[in-house]
Length: 465
Image (tube, rainbow, N blue to C red; front, side):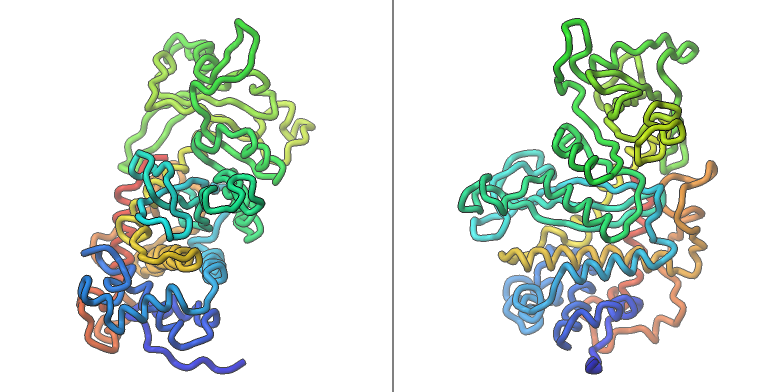
């Protein structure tokens, strides 16, 4: 193997992380471009992270500078495979004890849209953009991520291509619906040996029979939300919607809960709340069916819209006919109501993640048109995000625990123990880690400081489970 030519090192701790990708880039310019791009993504946001911003050039006029053009070429014209880069990123995460996935985590499936103008850009179309809460011109990306109580990170992402981009529309063999892309990404996660207890998703996916069926055929467990008013066929007096099924459950108050069981949830600030969960029956769904309907709420009497979950799962009921311990044939261990609540609660990591990758790391700031360039940008954002976690856990003052479930005395988000309010304490003096040339942003001399700041804000503002 030809020895790689030395490349100007990335500042601080980023160099060690970037070196793990060097063999994926055949040219010195590509290895330098990787370092420059990820460093730019970690820069504190002062403006959109376009090529000029990532290169530290002036807006508008600076877009024609050599530095900005080098960044643009690396993203659009240079020859490197974003799938291989993403696979290496996951290899590094899986190899570290602090970030390795385990069977008690979840695989979260979701999609997110961002507004983009024009018609020549790949994947752009008029479609629902959840971030804006309306239909507009933009790009929607389906993604998967792994999460437990302490940590989460993205796994794979694939832009959805609207039907009008294909010659035969939705009948074109190359067309993929969002749910089909989601299933393919879940299978890809399994192939990458990512362990998880169940796939979790909101009602945009959970309501789809085909989505649940394909996951079942793939051998995956799932806990997905369904719409409270999603109708199903039933005899006249029987329940026709999940909301109807929940309304038939017995409840006379906390002292006489009837069909409901208390489930304690812990919030990131340490306070706890008592929620209630129950098995409901709807058509063929029920406690002893292949699909269970679980209702979770803060108030079984009122079933408030914003504090009630209607969940479908193929994880068997403990002691039920599909429990393997009772002679059942389910491939999954049984899950009680408390575990169902826990698993779906981890889905909210995805909302926090959007704040980080979009608001801080420039997920939607790219100014490229081709499919390959868009996917390269997304893979580099994922690398920047994963570097943040790597830096956080490599902090010698962290005392972080190995992955696993939090104990009864630990919070459900972030690493246990106090969260440092200062920047990362480096193993070497800062003076020995300065960039080899003058930087236009002195605060970026070591992006490790920025990485720890991002993670600290993540665990402080993380949602509940």
